Length: 305
Image (tube, rainbow, N blue to C red):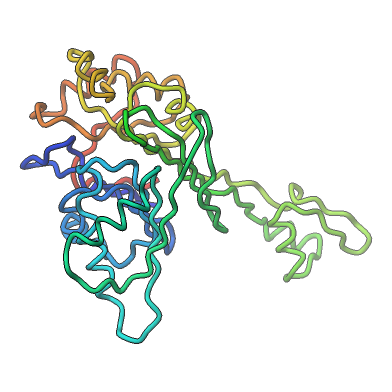
């Protein structure tokens, strides 16, 4: 599993930071979280095949998080050969996403060769919803506090069992369906003996990742970050201008660290940094007052999880 930061700036791109975009590569799946202006060029520079995007998770519809979407859709469609079944792109987003996608597709002239499946998420205020459940992972969403419909996302890798082949041989368990049942956590019977999964395997805990973008401090942010291996969180400002953060419903670095600390997150990476900060130092030190295992993201930063 690898996370690539494609844009780490706040509303305005700078010489060093593009606007929001994060790419999560997991096995053969590609998950793009937000798609600000210039995201597909950032992917190209980062060496990411843009055609590997299977899912797009939109946190909200402010321009710095979605304005690269139309260009990416056009590029993804170009992989499709005429008369072939069009590839499917799944787009998840908050209330109004379906209507805004329809409007966006009318803004320029091109032949859409994608089958776009829009999943508009309507969540209750304190709800955490499973929005995608695959063989290997679950993606969850929850509402944030940003003044417009805005979501945070959590990637939950499912636990797996690692079979001890030596114990399998000792117990003379034949390969095939019985091994599969053990891997699914089911007991089996061999030669009249009941064998429980824990006797021949160990559980490998799945990795949990939370991405929290534009929001003020809220209960759902802490819930989404609870016990995650990595929390990626916006930190638009340092706490010296906390009032500005509160007025704009954004987080300071210290508030992001507060969320990480109270959620028992293992590691924190800050992103969505205001253009006013020419270096990372002030934002980083602001967070370290509360939470030590913290970094500030930069464009093209890659993190293996």
